[in-house]
Image: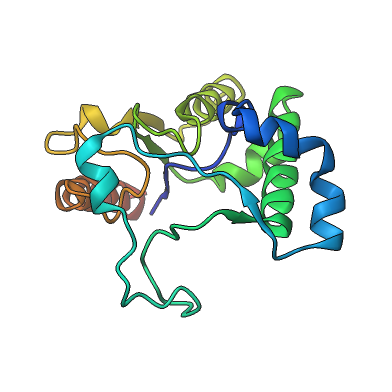
Length: 191
């Protein structure tokens, strides 16, 4: 038993600072209401050259299929972008003010594992580190474990970017996750 978050969108500060996105931010609400499906948000590119080509969408993928596992290659749509920004900003504000109810709802009294790549330019890895630190500092006497790892700390996952379940190295990541879940589920069954 446990909670695993892979490259969670907990901070978009670097993405917001991109020139085009910083121009669009002041009019995001207007665009979301008026042109909700307008492709506006520029997504980050992988800084790892071999992943840039690997992440180009396969023409056979149907992104309207709810079970499609491909990374969407297009620009972020206005409404989805605005709602995503609002949600992440609300979470970040609550964490900054150390909202105890939010922290306890994240924990669910279970171990938490956050994994992010240092190379991630889509969502800032510092958001994961920030969440782990906030939860650890508010645990008090809790025996829940909170672990934050970079993919670069897991053998075989050194050159990952953002789409962690699909990139080269995902098999090693899955083995690590399975081991982590197994070790935490057996400790909870013994209680």
